[in-house]
Amino acid sequence: MHPTLTIAVKAARRAGHIISRASLDIGQLKVSAKQQSDYVTEVDKAAEAAIIEVLQEAYPAYAILAEESGSTAGAPDSEYQWIIDPLDGTTNFIHSFPQYAISIALAHKGIVTQAVVFDTCRNELFTATKGAGAFLNDKRIRVTNRVKLADALIGTGFPYRSFEHIDTYLAIFKELVQKTSGLRRPGAASLDLAYVAAGRLDGFWEFGLSPWDMAAGSLLITEAGGLVGDLAGENNYLATGNIIAGSPKIFSQLLQLIDTHRTDKLQA
Image (cartoon, rainbow, N blue to C red; front, top):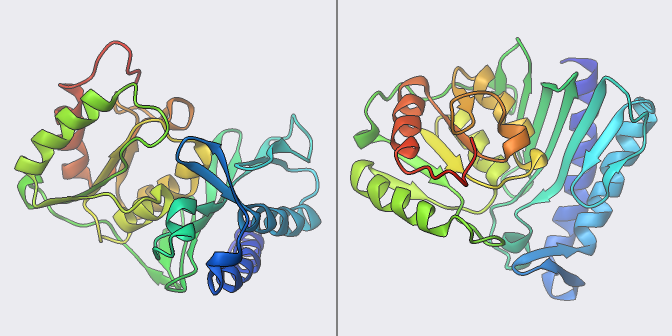
């Protein structure tokens, strides 16, 4: 395992211990709303602090982009940046809905090179190093080999903060629900992307995500043999927040279908 990936796994497991312990008594948590339907708990903050502590101890000069604290620590002009979501799926967590994860990625000159997605509920650790494959609990994973959209199970995440593109979402949903074997909206994008890498989903699409939602999961998919792109099929998804992912055949069909519903306001 690459040294930086080893440290990322150590950080994820330390945060996972905090989250697992807190999950035993959800009713005692302090929860506040960042905005409508967007929550943060003391657990998010404690998990993020634990992750940052581990990462900074090992690599103090690396920059950090974290969901709760923003861009912090390290050298702002560093070629390396940790991208962290300490608890992806906070709404699920506070409802004891067991679909949430820790996501940690390392980017070098803007390219994601290391990835960890840790599902504390199932003790499933997804990892990837650029050029070295993707793994689930140390076992190699691959995207599915399905070729027809009609046979595919597709994941997505519908809007919960901004509803600017809700009509576009619904139009895509309406078409896909008729042209696939099913759609799923579990509520934690990093885990959805990990599921594409592991072959549990054939594809995924969502608009308006943040880099920490996508960074680790995107590397898992490409290292598992899949494709990831923005709405133009390019690699600008971390900047635009709009992502399409899947096995190669399903990716191309999703991209084509979604493109027919794009509006001028919805950038790639």
